[in-house]
Image 1 (cartoon, rainbow, N blue to C red):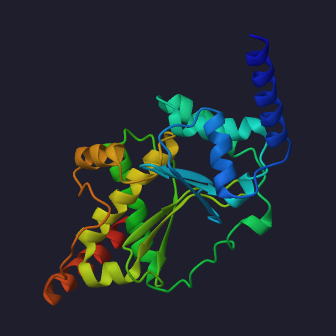
Image 2 (spheres, rainbow, N blue to C red):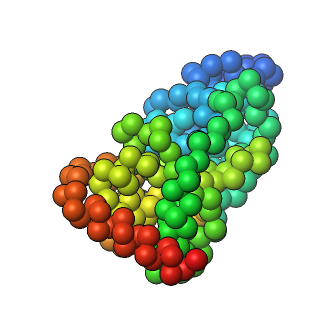
Length: 254
């Protein structure tokens, strides 16, 4: 019994010494999180993502570099975020995670706004209108109003939802200009609704991914329940008609 007690004390002392200094790499952080109850994660990747501090998919956990030296309550919140069974648990953990100030050295560059074009105003007004309409139809009007941008830099992506950061950068949805030009307005609205499902995930404390919850919600709102979809460019005449209709609708609302 005495030998067992002595061994246990040595284990606790070793654990105390290990936790006396912050983890310095992904392996050490993963070990610490496992001590706090993390299960089901076999790989931890450190990132410099400026928007998403912590995310997970399957058995991989992604954590911003700046969380290596986070205090114990924040590390425990990361575990709770992964293991939480309810939205309330995950949302509470998320709020604790965001209290930790991530040093600028661990953050990716601040968002740089794309160059606006004169014709963007009409398209952005229409996208904002459909965001409001889809919010009412599919989300009960619960989604927050969000900034929508157009990008000429997206080469393969059709759109992107970016979460708000702890540094004052608001959440935003970006749609590819080339996507609208090449695939038409109906497909662009499909992409907008896809990104709104990600907005719904973020605002309800769910992981932002294309997992089970995404697929269930995507099916419910009537869009492709997958990360990527194959698109075909419509006939040129159809594109011209779509752009004319877009201009007429925008003119009626202006």
